[in-house]
Length: 322
Image (tube, rainbow, N blue to C red; front, side, top):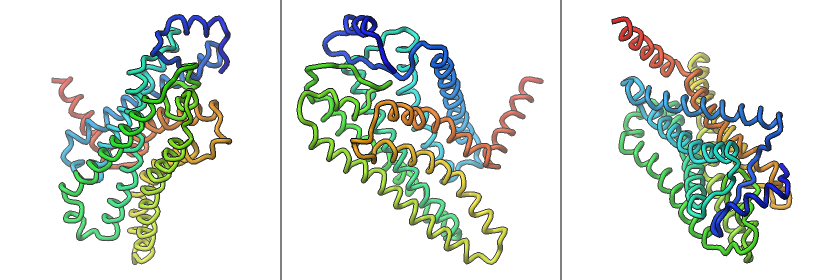
């Protein structure tokens, strides 16, 4: 989106020397107002859906299993991700004040990188859970003990947070002595690197290698797990059992496709093919749309979650009638 010179001058005058200016993704045209309204509806659904899923998993004993424990961690990551990005974007759009402080920008970078990295690793390790459940059902309770589940979830959080801390320390120590206008709707590392007044090519190469590792490692775990799952399904004597096994994996495969498709498009493309407009649109997809779709995918296609929801609604009706 283009911004006229007068508005740009106003934003520059409002900002202090340490502030960045987020151009955003929407103007105030009728079409963009409609697009903004859609994004806010999606944000509201993502917020309510993930809070509801977290609540159901915590209060219903039938959902106290490894699969739903991992799902609760995924919902928590999605909830934190949308709250890191969307409120600031909405406030900037509605108020017209597009500045973000140096500390606020660093906080966004740290949280965003940490949460995206953690979610990518968790999705990869969740595939291992499905592999054990289908290929080794008799040993599932021992292989996926509470200790193992905590180690899997903890490692996802630790590696993601470590990645976020490393990136924010490096990026925010670069000198930004020229323009501080970020052509994005939040502080994303590639958009900030364009503003640095030093050569960042070495860091960008290391960043690309890190993204390859953080994306392809869990993706390799997913592929290996599902190859094993497919082999186990093909050796099942009952076709109905095979269908049930694949059905339990379908929600995870859908979530993986949405997350990794968008992330690989953003971070694994050569730099010469990157454009700010494409990055903004795809970023909306996996920072807002995917967190909305995940709870819907895992709830509407899951009998246990729908049963827990029905039970909760029945309890609410009974309480209101008393």
